[in-house]
Image (cartoon, rainbow, N blue to C red; front, side):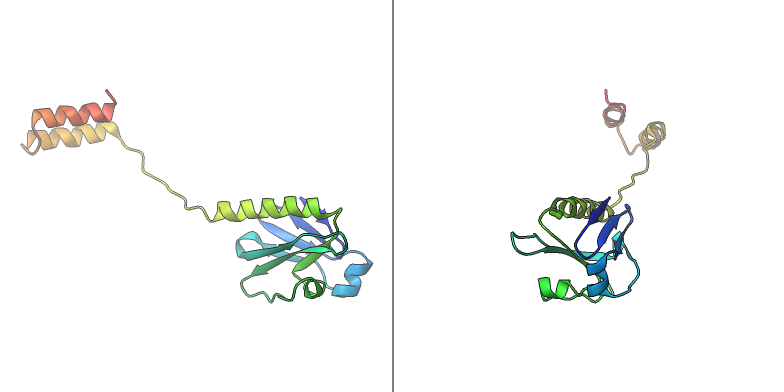
Length: 150
């Protein structure tokens, strides 16, 4: 996904974002800096200010070890981690922001893996418990039915 703003472009590739500076305003506000790439897993917050009728909006990224400006729109024009956009461009930035947030949320979901239950092995262990006198025949049969879903 890509969104073109007033002073740069934002590209989202799935695992990272790239902030690109092309165009005259980008050169004026950011100088001759090259493209900047930030891994999605490093992003700690996204600040988003919608564009108004007379003012530009911006999207700004914060991450561990990064230096962000916190002074609103004026500072966002100077911040290398922010891209300004006008009202016409705002929809693209809203969509890319949502996609980035979805990716961040998916990375923060715990991965739960459970070992598959071997039903035959479980029944054999129950039979051993029955044979050694720990389980009664009724307890064994009830648990066996539960494991077999009968």
